[in-house]
Length: 151
Image (cartoon, rainbow, N blue to C red; front, side):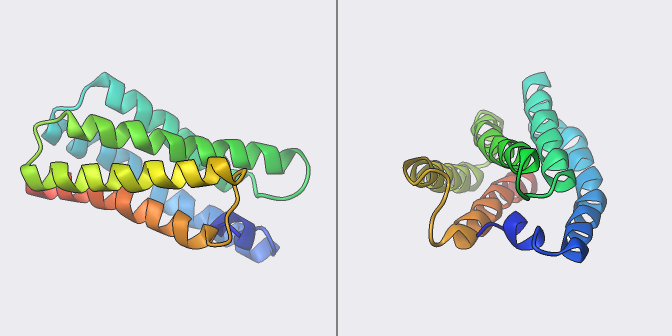
């Protein structure tokens, strides 16, 4: 099960999940659009992809992964967000980042593409989905943080 599937089981968990993203998403977006993109000299394309990924995160946080149309909308948004993290890491590689940042970004990118390939092969499911999903977010965040603090 994914994080969202765990959260969708109970109304209280859906509310918690929404509040968590309502609190965390605005500072994440601000950081990526302003200090992060400015420091690394990332342009409009990076900001556009960040905006699309953030919109997908917002939709995934707002629409719980429950039966019917909500399941489809949530999954499209969640996987859209995950797919959009890949070009963000690629764009970080094109920036004036440090050598260590590039190594972390390349390692993160390899893991992210590996996860996407596994999930595509297994029709977007996997017995270790929660671990794959959690590490996917961790390596993305690691690539961003190392690029920011080592540049």
